[in-house]
Image (cartoon, rainbow, N blue to C red; front, side, top):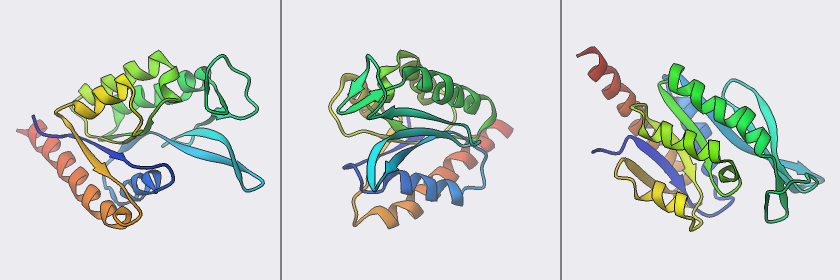
Length: 183
């Protein structure tokens, strides 16, 4: 099985989301899914928001969020993940040529529905462009070991080149899927 799921990995802050967004801007394909964005206040990171490719947004985690689910100093809103990220992935399976999953990480995995949605998009025939946290967790290890996943490590030195390489690969995957569908 060839890799139709391209997942970026690397240290926090190296620009994985920046690469994903730059690749999406270069694609001529329909894209669906979500990104995560930092919430900054007074120059400091205070949390993370989920932002869908069609503009829906919710606070996923915040230092002031009280929740039974925490990662580091952040309270995690499983409700936001289930209400925004999970439907964005399900919708992408129906309408998009490429599914964006930024990111598959400890916070998002507080939601069992999110894990199920990630499995569904990775198992689907649609190419996935995403980010997988480098942490060692059973689910993350499972995702990284999949034979249909190509991991691309992003570093400050490789970030700019990764945009062009990954964009070409994703476009080729979309073309191949279209060609197979019309054959």
